[in-house]
Length: 228
Image (cartoon, rainbow, N blue to C red; front, side):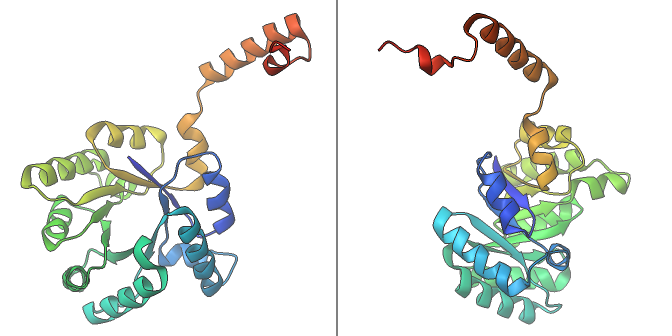
């Protein structure tokens, strides 16, 4: 499963990348409005980080027509290069933009997906990713994880190479269940990363190891006891 950070702050991305094997990061218009730095400064930092680390960069278009979306996608790809994936919303004009982008060789993620049929049409149009909003789907009274599982199955059965990148999570269990059903990618808010690996039993076990070690060997470390 590919892991992406859903954030605009490059320092947060770098901090998470020191501990977690992330594949890149995703942004959206709302995230940019909450950023501490200007968008142009962020874009330059994204490019530098992506070039140095081989990370994928997902940026969403802000145009409302297919032509506007396509023109923005071309400019963004020209700037970021091979690591770039354009995010296009799952609206009528967006589906036309997907086809234009694919004809131009631009990787596409169809985003703000809330139904199986939105995802299927996107896959058939040539999208490389679809991004269902899991918690949003739950809030509508449907089953977000179940909806993703249907997408994974439908794409496999239909022979579509499109990947599902789950988004909008509240709990680690949602992410776990997506991994079990075969979802190929997730994009996660920074606060959830530590929760992915946290477990009270692990913390208690490590505490026990530390206690018995220090009682026996004091301040020495295991590397201090190597033969001289």
